[in-house]
Length: 140
Image 1 (cartoon, rainbow, N blue to C red):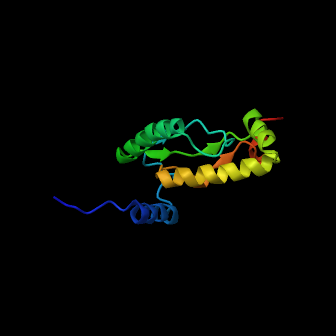
Image 2: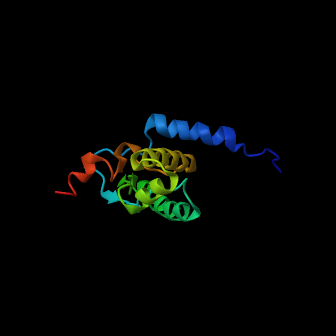
Image 3: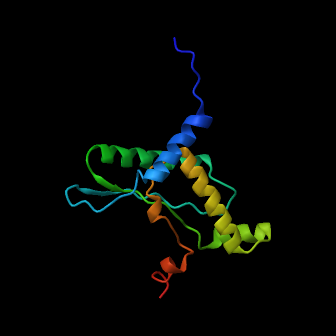
């Protein structure tokens, strides 16, 4: 029996760094592969961090994305933030901080948590609904 212990403090950061540096989950146009789009419900970055419901749902869609990649699909699996609305405003009021400040801080925290969990998102496609480059297309 192997008594070696799994040292998550060294193993997991090693692979997280590898995935980030190599953009392991970045999707590129590849007409030779069928396309597959996996879209999660974007979290409201209006709290101090993820909860178990986020992790449960994102695990399921990550399994689908990884399975489709293994089956030869060109999988787009982005992550974004539903950061423009009442939950963000209410959190800002509760904490006494401007909504943009709390939203940016919470997004950074959520992003860190999601990356630590090892989900296979294409982080180059990340966006926030509070970004003027996004909402200019939704509010005209």
